[in-house]
Image (spheres, rainbow, N blue to C red):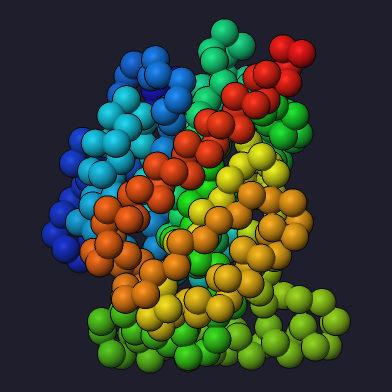
Length: 311
């Protein structure tokens, strides 16, 4: 399947695209190696969901590192524009369609080619913005493929950097103030978000059910099949810091604890000095060692499954 190229979304940094990547959608980038990864102990697809307002020069720190670690893996990068929090669901889904096209072209789904070996997928999610994009993609894939992927054992891992947590008004203000520099636009956006927050809170109380976006996000992230190729077998790595002003470390710790209680393999790497989504700047060696360790855990689970099928 060929993937359409469109004009790049220009970020504030002036970098027009990720080095070595093609732009396949608004804020969506693909690095396709064009060859099969012969080493079955390595991922062959890496899916990255950036944090809200992340500049390409920052995301490139991660794509470059992954290219060095796993040079034969294709990478898909999904950016998160601040308007994801108020854009209609239909618009957000249309923007994510190129991700599904890319995953199909990389033979990640049963219908792609029965002759292809099962994929090995590493998913790396940043902050609540990236989490929102990932969970929406999960809904789209489940509607399209149903339980076909859930019934397969696919080697996979989920890396959660600085997420998830319930957003308070304070953290909402901090997050949007960091990415919206224009003071007038910032006031307009924050006023709209505060209104949405209180309307959602009021409706939750009146209707007796949760309709708060961030709270619903935390709940969705407990789904072992948050992306349909994942399951209880998928090891999760939570990367977070005590100094993160946007995502309280206690919230992340509690999320991981509940995931463990629900039968998931959840592991934590708590940093002491790094800010929000900035752990690689403070302790890069520790960060990437943790990533490699969690992938090794996924491979180990795959070998156990292979042995089970042989007996």
